[in-house]
Length: 88
Image (tube, rainbow, N blue to C red):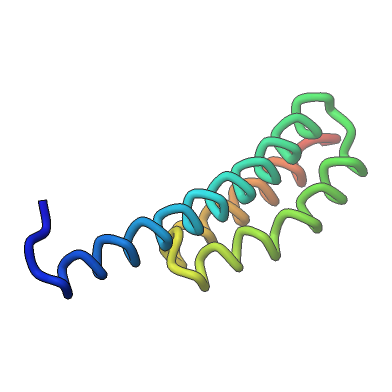
């Protein structure tokens, strides 16, 4: 347990940031799940539209430090590749 005043304040700050980051991560995962479901349904147009909506959310999560920039880019790239391969 924190003893000093500054350590107690740091704990409060960390708790607030953790909550914000948890919400951002959850939001990103929700958008990813919508794209995955659209891909699973086989509807290329719906999947492309879902990715178009999800991509800014994924990149925003990277910008805010929830996930690494390369991780976000990799996720978008792999989803786009899977969507491109749907109707072929």
